[in-house]
Image 1: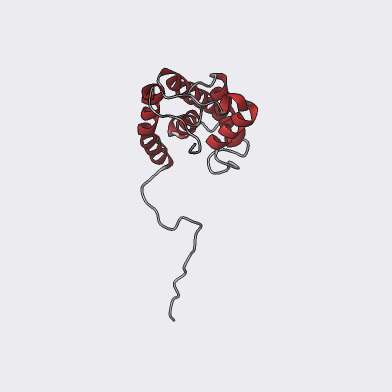
Image 2: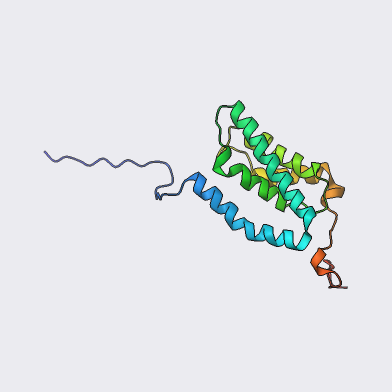
Length: 160
């Protein structure tokens, strides 16, 4: 009697490697750092404060929500990347309560309403940006001249 081999098809991904969520998130944060450093060089201390507040608020709200839901996930890098992306999406002269509220909205409302990683209904960082844009449109649409380009042609508009 010939024995048949059973083939089991599982859910994606079918190709596996050694990457974990922690490795991917911290690698993503590392890849975003050159752009963040360039923004700090161009816009100075105000941009650093926006990044600090958005990352700090994202990490603090992640700690609160994940410990409340008994799924502690602060050190896996997801909140750091979300806060970094929120901060990089903010104008450098925005009041500091705007990136704080955007990061809180991104983590608390978008990420944790449906249960965390892989269950969020949209990208948390972009949702934080949209929340801030609709809540404070005057602050979010104000152009800040780069400090290092004083005297240079820095108008961003259609050709006159």
